[in-house]
Length: 294
Image (cartoon, rainbow, N blue to C red; front, side):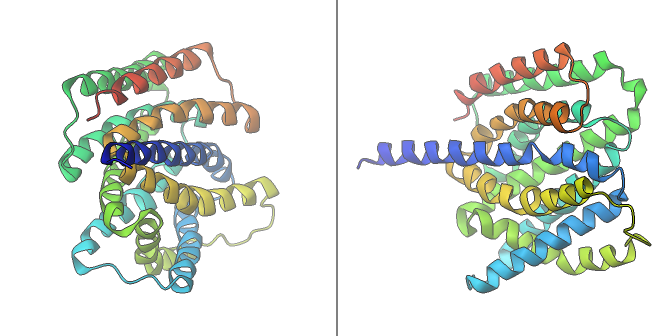
């Protein structure tokens, strides 16, 4: 097999793993929206991280993974602050002010954020045309938010924008580190690194009673803990490492499609034609930008 064939296979694997990760992440915001109706956002954030951290610790011990090097600790801290704490907390707070259908469209900004940090942290150099299409997709998202009226909930929209920034950094840092440690190892060590803090905070923010918590809320907590915090990252970080942070990061533009379908199906939230048209336009941008990612 030639090196070119090997590179092509690696890119294809990265695309497949990235798509699986995006599909899993698509359920995160609807599930979070459902969970924060009965759980405090801070408790939800730390509880999901604690549950995922315990599972990750078991995996690392059972599979006898070696500890990361000291040089990797800073990167793991960045991953933990970005995707274990920052993004879940900021989105949980945002979803107290906006619907999941509205917040999902902000995910269209994630590829641009991830690509920027991929350049800063991963030494990637996409072509100018990549930035053109990536910026166009982001502009469509911002334009949609403005058309909906940011004055309706400026707090929710600002929290979502902050979430996108910290998540992009966490994605890029994790994708870079996955080339050395492996995809599931990176998120597992980041979760374990956070485990003492999030466990303590979970106990401090524990609800006085769990009476009245419905089954859908418990299922939502289980989903964001197991799939959003752990399983999804196994595929996502592997995809970023195999296919390139900027290129695979563009797949996040597909997430609104999956997320809007879930929001409409599970939460019965309204999905307008404007939302669908914006999603279609940004999907076209992802295929255009991906051609010029390297």
